[in-house]
Length: 446
Ligand SMILES: Nc1ncnc2c1ncn2[C@@H]1O[C@H](COP(=O)(O)OP(=O)(O)OP(=O)(O)O)[C@@H](O)[C@H]1O
Ligand SMILES: [Mg+2]
Image 1: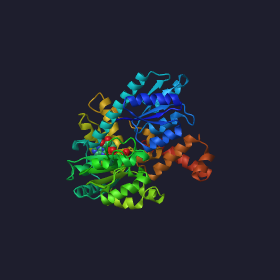
Image 2: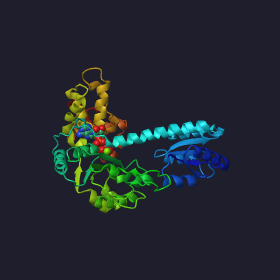
Image 3: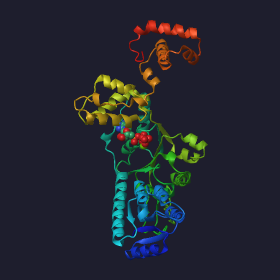
Image 4: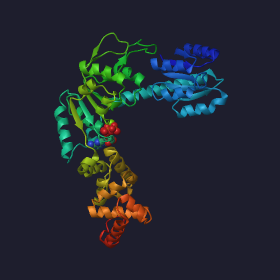
């Protein structure tokens, strides 16, 4: 049976809607004010929230903003004058709106459609967490000694049950490595379940992780199995663990230590056999110092630490990865374009490389993708651009001097002040620049 929270300050209307919905076998809770609605939303998982956008104590939009990205589907009840607000609510993630005075059949249709969509989303989510990425989806060969060592350690610890913590910048392939460890372990035919700690709201975390028993709270009409239990015999991947709320960390700690947990509302412990792999791009040591991450949990999840180097630190792998990403499109790249890729800064690491190559492969009309490659140069700082050409100290000085000369329209005083030298020295250097300019054709700034 589906659970509805009805938020409406008009007592008569509330009574009427509740009665009609209960006739249709929905479970209906009521709230007459915003604060009461928020409290109920935090205590219980609803399928649908019917929300009057104009509440006595607050703007209903605030509730939509806070809760619509999570569990329930919001259907907004609005008066004639509030249609704009209702549209804004839909922009913020509400499912539908319905205008007062409304036809009850219309409301029922909207509820049924919302429930159908919610069910699909839930099924999708469950399926996704079970999906295995095929091995050919990633490329884990390397010419980088540092990454080689990481991969060797990963292979050595894969068959054990030791908890692994994977660190590295965004897009370096932390999830790829976690899936790889799972795929070469004895657990490979069992689930690999991802817990994305950035997207689960704090008040739902415990029930998402550990599930709940029927009757645990008013909306718990049947037992729900949590992610930890879904991962039984397989691997539980705690992604972005640095974002896990501290309140949840203590519950997780107990589980990591004992492999036992209790479903919300449950009376006895459940034991499961899972291997834990965590990942983060945050500085956990700093979070510990700030009191945002439990030190005891840190030691528990960190029996083995694997730090994936950024793509900048393993430029030698760029040609291999480019070839790997181009292969499925049957396209090529010239040596020159490849060199540009090697010298790019890759703030977004392998993810960014993959996106740029795949986009270019799709857009290019010829066999070569060169023309279609569009590096977002603005991300590369000027100094980094200069460094890619690896200038000598003298070249560097001349480039900088010319840069200043252009920037300050030849104002020698200003240049002298910035360089911290006399006007005479600046004149001497500028003279030298003029004489030497012909010798530095390859410096783009000249
Ligand atoms: N070695 C690799 N071979 C092929 N694709 C890779 C590799 N490493 C990363 N990728 C691709 O780059 C993207 C990012 O990888 P992944 O999600 O594993 O990174 P991440 O470190 O978890 O990033 P984030 O910190 O943003 O979560 C994915 O599309 C993934 O397929
Ligand atoms: Mg990730």
